[in-house]
Image (tube, rainbow, N blue to C red; front, side):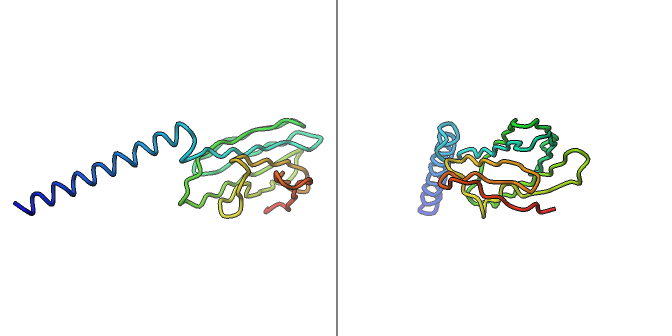
Amino acid sequence: MMATLLVSKNVLLVMSLTMCVTLQIMVGVVSGRLLDNTKIHIMNNMSHPFTMHGLFRDDNGFHTLQPGESYRYVFYKYPLWNMLWSLTFHWNGSEYYKYNIYDSRRDSCYQYNCYWQIIEDGPCQIVHNYTEPLCFSWNY
């Protein structure tokens, strides 16, 4: 009798906890509080078009940007999961250039928005509290 009562209380506790967590996740996704979506903004800052190809879990396809155009990738950043998002760039018969455009261990984007300008020498990150972009070399 006592064992049955204890099991019933434990089952009730687990069910209540599961419902509570599920509701928090649902509300968080809808309101953007628990799992905010991260946006990676890529802008072509060259005088000619380039094609980029994104890889993160899935193949995100090829996108060609004209000078001054931008493209945005959107994804959910999970708190306990290290995320790495690589992009490959190619233009005017050049070789292919690669850069890890998002690394959750490295990047903490202001209000979940990461802004990048792409130039021939490499990607430049626009950081909200700096006046000049931070430019990096290609990973090749």
